[in-house]
Image 1 (cartoon, helix red, strand yellow):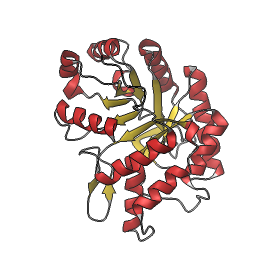
Image 2 (tube, rainbow, N blue to C red):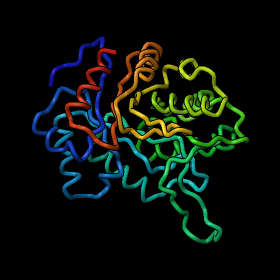
Image 3 (cartoon, rainbow, N blue to C red):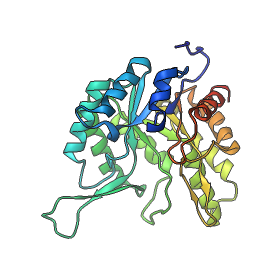
Image 4 (cartoon, rainbow, N blue to C red):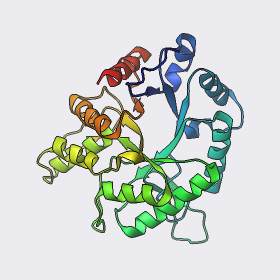
Length: 286
């Protein structure tokens, strides 16, 4: 693969099923590829075999959607064991998941916790921070490596929140030694929804202020994606090209955080591989 110039931020794409064969056949110049960890939890089979082929040609970043790091009932031991197995097999350059909860206890306390299969937001307060820190530390201890934790696009907020999100994430990183995965599109989606609710006059300025509140040394990766306006709400659907405003926020992030790795995410209406590569090229030059 061509070497990345020292002055450029490393850029990768989310490697999805539609592009498994073409990527391996053409080996386009990318700095890394990223996959969803849970798709490769089986000990064998075709999926893991394909990922091993990808790892032979590119550094791999493992991005999870199911650890539910903010869940008060704790992390599913099986899930953590499967992630540890995958990390051992692939030796990824980064491992990440989200600052969210998804597991909860049903009315019968003797029953197993239920997984909500969604990335549900946390209140930004000390109680939620304690839970998140404990689960992140447990994960890092099990994996024997640093975890990156991503900010969410959230469609509800909590009256019990008494901290700004950047302060909450900074405290998480300081207490656990984890890194932060800053999703630039998520920040913008949240600001647009705040504008629709009448609580934000200038979404772009709010995003830049959000980035300025993050400790630069904690940031290990950036995510870029598209979103969709649904009238009364903006949804982070990962189904289109990165918009001009998000590119502007991305440039500010790279200037502040120092050319950290960046990823193009595209998960719905997945386009031709050439479109993803074009977005990656834009991230290189942005």
